[in-house]
Amino acid sequence: MKIADKKTTATELVKTALKKAKEYADYNIFTFIDEDGALKRAAEIDAAIARGEKVGKLAGVPYALKDNFLSPRGETTASAHILQGFKSPITATAVAKLEAEGAIMIGRTNLDAFAHGSSTENSYFGPTHNAVDFERVAGGSSGGSAVAVALDIVEFATGTDTGGSIRQPASFNGVYGLKPTYGCISRYGVVAMASSTDCIGFFSKTPEDMDLLMSIASGQDPKDMTTLPDYYSEAPRGSLSKLRIGVIKEFDNESVDADIRKALKEKCETLKKKGYEIVELEMPALKYALAAYYIIVPAEVASNLSRYDGVRYGFRSKESENLNDLYLNTRSEGFMPENKRRIMIGNFVLSSGFYDAYFLKAAKARTLIVQEYEKAFLKCDFILTPVSPNPAFKLGEKVNDPVAMYLEDLMSVSLNLAGVPGLAIPAGKTNSGLPVGLQLVGPRRSDKKLIEFSKELI
Amino acid sequence: MKVDESTVKHLADLSDFRLNSDEAKRLGGDLENIIKYISQLDELDTSDVEPTYQVFEMENVWRNDEILPQDANCEDLLNLTVETIDNQIKVPKVL
Image (cartoon, rainbow over all chains, first blue to last red; front, side, top):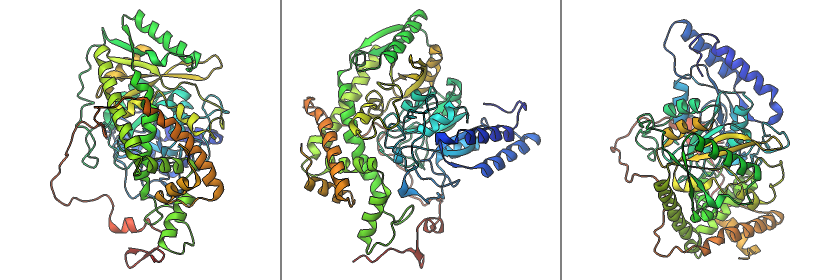
C-alpha cells in the first residue's frame, strides 16, 4: 500500500478507485461517494510528496468507510432512515488515525441498518450484492465494505463486528477480515450497537496490510474508556514453531456445508505438513452462544437505540401533535423491521418478570463461554473454525425468517461474547465457485501473532 | 411462550413504537420464534455461575476532573436539529 516510491500518484490511485466505484454502481456498495473531497486530499498529498515532505504510512491509499463511522464528510446514516440528514461535527478516532497517515476515504459503505443483520439486506438503501455472485448476499452487516475490497475498488475498508459483521462478509466475498480483541481500537465516534461486544476492525487483501492497519488504528484513547493500553505494536512476535491449532469437534457436523468442512480439513492437512500439531477440542458451551448473544445484544441495542427520538439529530417525523407523538412517529417511521425486532426483544428480556429467566441467564451462559475459551487455549494456541455454516446465500432467501438469518451467526458470535480476536481468511471456493472463509481465533491480545500465523495458511 | 397481541403492544410501548395491526401481527410471529430459540438456554445448568456483563479487563478508569476542549461546540450541535429557537431545540408541545 505504498506510493512513496513515486511510481504512481495519490491522484491516480483515487481516480482509479472512483472510476471502479462507478463501474460497480449496480452492486449498491456505497451510500455516499466523496469524489471532490477525495481528489482534493489526493492533490494535497501529491503536492506534499513533490515538496519532499514526509508523508504517512497510508499516503494516497484509497479506502472505504463503513457508514457507521462518524466524520464530517458526507452524512453518517448507519444505513438507517432515522439518521438521514445527520452530518457529524466530529470524527471517529479510528478515522482520524487512518487519515493522519494519509489514507483517503473515497466513500461510505452500505450496511444493515445500525449493523443489525447478516446480509446487508436490512439497509434502508437496499441490499449490496455479493462480489462473486450478483444473485447472492454480500453478507453483513459490513457488506458494502467487504465487496468494495473484494472488487478491488479500494485497498482496504473499515468495519464493525458485534457478532460476525466483519468476518462473515469477508468470508462471503473472499477477503481478509479482522475482529480484534475487545477494546483494541477506539470506538469513539462509531454508532453504538451493543457496547459490550462492539469492535472496530478492517477488511484487507493481505495479512501484511492488516498488520499495518492495526498498528495504526489500535491503542488507548481517552475518549473511549474501554480501550486497552497499547499492546498491539509492542506485542512480541514470538515463535510460530510448535504452535498447536485446535479444531472444534461440535462444528464438524452435517449442518455445516460440505465444501466448508472440506476446506477446513485441507487447511489442517497443510498445517500438519508444516509441522503444526492439530488438537481436537470439545467446546459444548458454544452451542448456547447464539441464544445468549440474541439476548444480550438486543438488550444492549434497546438501550443504545433509545437515544434516537427525532429531537437532536437525524430524521424527525413531520406533523406530530405533541412531544410523545414525535418520539413514537419518528421511531416507528425511522427504524427498519429488524431494528424493531431487536429493540422489542431487548425490552422483553430486560422487562420485569423476564429479566432473570433471559438476561441474567444469558449473562451466566456468557461466563461459561468465556471459560470455554480459556480452557481451550490451555490446550492449543489458536483455533481454526468455519466463519459461518454456509457460503453466501441467495438474496431474499432468509429475509422473512429472522431465526434462519440469526443461525448464520452460529460460529461467529461466541468470540464477541468472550472478547477474543478472530481473523477471517480466504480458504478457497466451493464447488459452485463461492468463496469459503475460515476464521483463526486466538486468546485476548494475540491479534498480531494471529495475523502473522495466518500467512502459514496462504 | 405465546406472544399475543397484548404482549406485542406492551413491548411496543416499552420501545416507543406505534405499530399498525399488520406490523404488530408480523412482529408478534417473529418475536415468538426468536423467544422460542433463545429459550433453549433453559437446558443449560447455570447454578453457581456468576454472570458476565462485560469482557473488558480493566475496571474504574478514572480521569482528572477537569474540563477539556470538546470536538463539537454548542452551535455545531444545535445545527444538527430540525428547528431551534433562542439557542434551544424546538419541539411540539409537551402536554
